[in-house]
Length: 402
Ligand SMILES: Nc1ncnc2c1ncn2[C@@H]1O[C@H](COP(=O)(O)OP(=O)(O)OP(=O)(O)O)[C@@H](O)[C@H]1O
Ligand SMILES: [Mn+2]
Image (tube, rainbow, N blue to C red; front, side):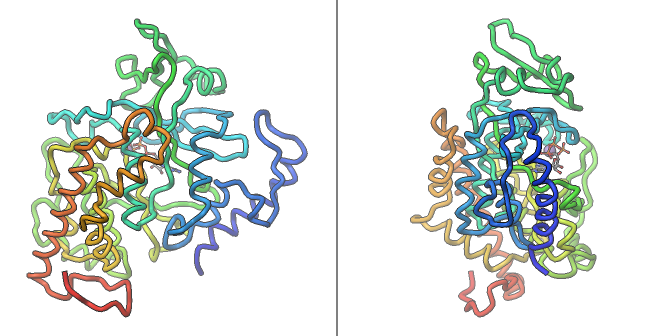
């Protein structure tokens, strides 16, 4: 039983729908002449079919470039608000039936999140979604769906084509003549928090949509290290240094790779300073023995001048790490593979880099500084617990220590 579960359901849907699509085409969409040969599949479908129990896409997946290109350049035929979640998001569709989750630019690249703002009131950043995808891939996790940056014509690609009346009604022209809209959502969807173009061009992130929930249902898990979303209360893990002991004993953390996967996620979040990881998701069909989806990274990369050590609590309190992750971190700490350099190079392939680098140099420097911190914490772990720190997911690998 491997990745096929998602795939089989998908193939069934495609085969059922082929006939329909070839008969009458919806407006703006291409005729779908797909068959069981993957050569005829559009990139988003190849992405869906390639999702496995262990990762979203393969290390050397040749489809990734094509998928990114589709997200960046394919014509947008539909844009409607996506319900669920707290901040404004749009669901965009392409002529080949591919779909993407759109998040608009709300903050300038060099702006740091206000220090008096609680993490749960922070804005989401389009560049954080993009940078998180690159970081996750560089760390070898491949647990974030591909995201690209794109300049959107708010009039031609949203207002003029949307069938979402509620969305269309929130468009207005600002005092200086820029096109703005605010949509409907539970936070920041008001004239004061409108998203405005220059004059109607807007930077945004587009993340490829995962397979529909009806085909590949997902389970949402509360993180044991989630923060208290109250200004006055502390969470259990903040008071109890032995907290990990109880987590380790309780399913699903007591078995398989769930705990080290959670620690991987904590390392990713510490590097990009994301305090907002209250939940994570898995594909239901893969059961408990599967990778964790790292969705919703918009609140990462808010501050470069400050690190947030508490994000590393799962690592510090459990003192455990996958060997593959450790080796990757050690590699990225070497001068010739420096994390900041690899990130800069990787991000430079995103179309929005031509407007401005997606992460400022200060954010890149912060990545290197935080990586040193992670390795320091691991060394301290090994002084304390020796060999039990490394979870050997690469059998046959010789142990050279830290
Ligand atoms: N690429 C994706 N494909 C499919 N579904 C997605 C994708 N990214 C996010 N989602 C779903 O959309 C939901 C809302 O997205 P997201 O968490 O980014 O928005 P949000 O407004 O920040 O939500 P919240 O306030 O609950 O954190 C997520 O819980 C997730 O289930
Ligand atoms: Mn969120």
